[in-house]
Length: 214
Image 1 (tube, one colour):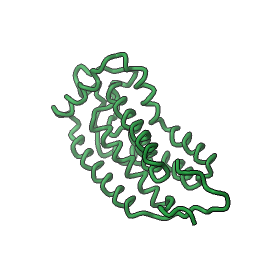
Image 2 (cartoon, helix red, strand yellow):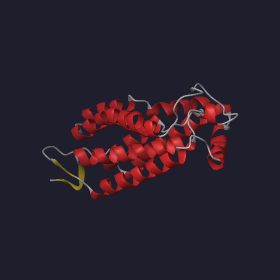
Image 3 (cartoon, helix red, strand yellow):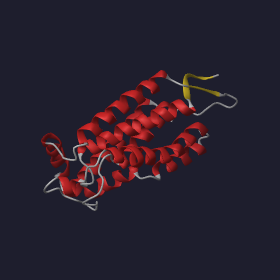
Image 4 (cartoon, one colour):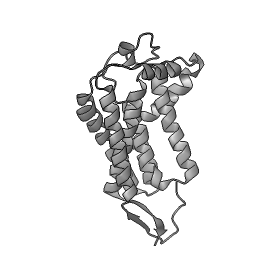
């Protein structure tokens, strides 16, 4: 995270235009993915991308299974505990809010609008590795969580750590395709939705200002 606060120094917070722009762009990308996935089928390009990732060697199964756990519903709460230890109260609050907002956006909005089955039903020959063969596929809830966390942590992290967090989120999405749980549009739409939710939460609670010492 950012450098520890010096004793007696109060960090200043504010709301950034970049978060509003990020939320708008990410919401637009989510909508575009939803429109593309709405017919319920998997197009040729998406299928080829799925097969390229899903067909990777079985030796990757357990490492990628570990990466996919980074998108479970408890992940934001685990990161929130760390934020509390570091006395980042606003960040902890936003991470806690990410859980119910993820459920609302995923289940009450996107899954109601887009009826598409999992690759085990829509893609012939899909290799399933401990994932359901049927059920609603769009969006990937794991991707919503992983990229929502990225958006919330971004204002607090130095660049090298942000690169690490983004890489972990990408590996989480790759893992969901590799395991056969989702097609590429599912994880792309989920990632965009997560960024949109995270950016909106940043606007709600405020983030550290560039001139953070005051």
